[in-house]
Image 1 (cartoon, helix red, strand yellow):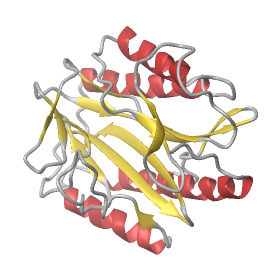
Image 2: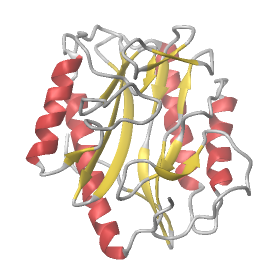
Image 3: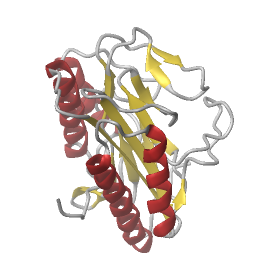
Image 4: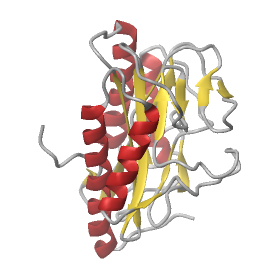
Length: 259
């Protein structure tokens, strides 16, 4: 299903996006050496419920996961790049942490992800990988405008990632979003310009460049959810929800909190 939002629904999408972004902003500030992933999940639950919002994850049970996800946020550490299921792990100095969050407020969902390094140690390779996903995300957003094709966005994202030297997996990527978290169209992180669905105002997309340092192959963890690099290399993931407007793309998942 491809959903085109009404102007009223787009206003609600702005609120959803701000909520998701502000939660991630708050969590990043709280995540230090010694933080447990289960604490991150609990903090997320509290902020979602306090806002009167609903989790998109707790009851989520797609074909690629084993049963309901059962948690409020995805927490990926180092080699875990997607669908990281929170578990009893304490963050160490230099860990590369990815937080991926989707929540629904007043019937409209928003989805965003950030990757950052915990503590004082900042491995140069990890910093470069995070920055590459952020550049790719900006490139995809810049290509998003009415009349553009999904392939234009995929090409913009993939060009940045491949130029940076990273293998690209196209099994999982960006997607439409609106009254539900995952909708058509699929937005792979590599593609051919001029191909695919033509963008129109009112369309919401979650763009999410993600990479693994030396492989494009994933392996599923024994938890049935967490996707890791098959080689054990580090990974990074950046994501924004955007709205296609008459003037281009509006980023909905920018934090409004200070600090």
